[in-house]
Image (cartoon, rainbow, N blue to C red):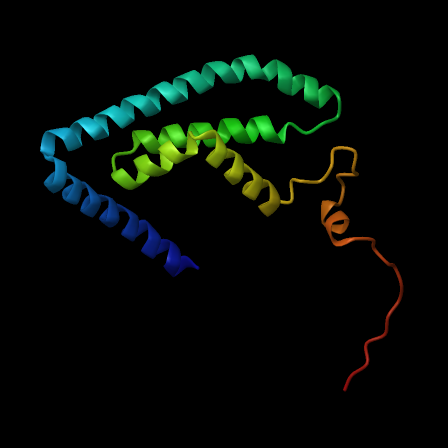
Length: 150
């Protein structure tokens, strides 16, 4: 696991540099530089706008918490949008594409559903949150057992 993380952290910058060089050869140096600067400005605008809208959404989230609901969807939406903005700020074509994809609502919704299912966040709000793993596996049957050796 540790080796794969090291390879990923080494491969991503090398891939970004290779894509920047290829893009520079294809469309030229100045258009590539303008593309990188433009996406960084776009990412800054997205993060700033999302910061102000988070202040507006705070009232909705506190209402959901008062009703006993978990505000997973709005928080996840905000987190994915800010992540998209941060990826746009990073220099590189691959990060820019990933950041732009996170700003598309359909893609963000799909990734949000995947994240919620990955972390088992799809437990209904009326459920008992003390042990969501048992709820996903079905009823728990208690009993005694004796281990028999071969």
